[in-house]
Image (cartoon, rainbow, N blue to C red):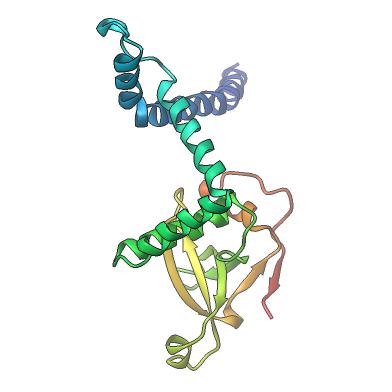
Length: 212
C-alpha cells in the first residue's frame, strides 16, 4: 500500500513539477522584461494621455514596449542606412578598451545561440576536463594559429567550454587535436544539453568519432 502511494506521489510530481517550473520561469521572465521599460512607459502615459495619478502600473506595458523596440531595431538593422548606422556604432564601440572585448564576445556567442551562423561554434566536441577521466562538452572554434601554436609543440585547436546553465560564460582551452572527440550532435543540441545541466534527453546516442 505504501509503495503504491509512493508511486502515485512520484507520478504526480513528475507531471506537476515541469508544468509548475515552466510557469514560474515564464512569470519570472515576464516580470523581468516587463520591468525594464515599465516606469518609462507609465511616465509617458501619465504625461501624454493625462491618466489619473492613481492608475498604477499596467501589466504588460513594459514588455510591449520592449517588443516594439526590438521590432523597430530589427527593421532598422535590415535597412541599408540602418546597417550603416549600426556599423558606425559597432566601429566606435570596438575601439573602446575593455568594452570592445565584452561586446564582441557577447555578439559572437549570441549569434551562435540565436542564429544559424557558425563563426564561433563550429562543432560540438568532448574533451577530458578539468582532469583525466572527467569529460566536458565543448565547442570547437578554430585551429589555433600564431604565437600560441608556436609556443606549443603539439598541434592544438581552440575549444570553448561553456558554464551551466549560462553558456555565455566559460573557458577557452587549447587542446591537442588527438585528445578531442567530435560529437555526432548539432551545436544546438549541445547547447541545450549544457543549459539544461544534462537533464534533457538527446534523441540519438552520442556517437563519438575521433577528430581528424
